[in-house]
Image 1 (tube, rainbow, N blue to C red):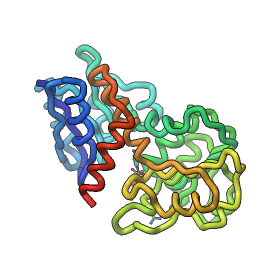
Image 2: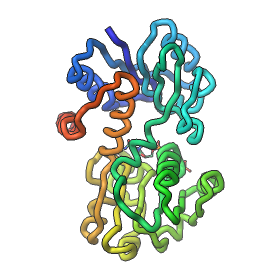
Image 3: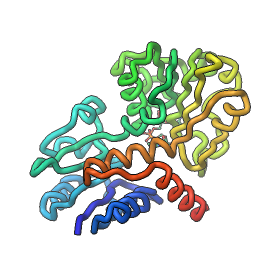
Image 4: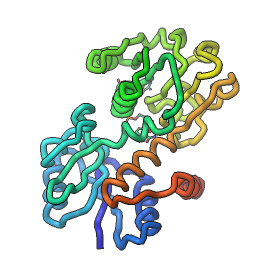
Length: 272
Ligand code: NAP
């Protein structure tokens, strides 16, 4: 019996247990993926449990992504570059920390060409997006946050431009990325991170709006972009791709993106 799980606080209605338990079953692996909600400060206990019980793999989410870093034996280059771990896995008897959010972010963008990108937000998802854009070698990247100080810090770290929040609608980019919760189900639903004039810019053939949110699947941001003739990308693809990368690290196996999407859409529909 192989044991896996997710830790964070609050864990809310994470889709990870549904996805990974299905993937284990698909791969014919006898195992379970559980939810371990733990408040800040409890990572030493979790890592002790991983070592003692030889738990095969853990998804790590807010608020533990940085706190877990000094507790593992080895960090991948991506985790080090990002300063955050979202996956624990074993390489023989070495407990490793990796970050698959970058891979998840980049996957839907592979094979496409952009001249410039604007990242809205300066939290963990924005950080993964900036690391991903660096891997894609985009010529011009900018970051923008309602709290300018946080955006400036990220801009300095990733050596990209910092755009004032009030100026974001006028910034010229053909890849617009929402890494804020604006538009997400709950208190921010129906809110748009960019004013409509932003959609009058960009190169017609390459322009894409990428919303990292996946509840709802089609945010107002995506709907307005599509109506203005932009291509759109929702956040479910990133969520699935980061989970595929975790599953590969834990089991060496793959699962189908299309089948995972069908499963998650059904689950999201069931939850309403
Ligand atoms: P986070 O670390 O809390 O960062 C959120 C960012 O949004 C911060 O820069 C915050 O600014 C800004 N923000 C918050 N409220 C805002 C408001 N009312 N107006 C303007 N900006 C606001 O969160 P995160 O983990 O980066 O997640 C951000 C979004 O990405 C969420 O919607 C999440 O669902 C999504 N996400 C998706 C995936 C995926 O796999 N698809 C993975 C991770 C995250 P301040 O902190 O300066 O206030």
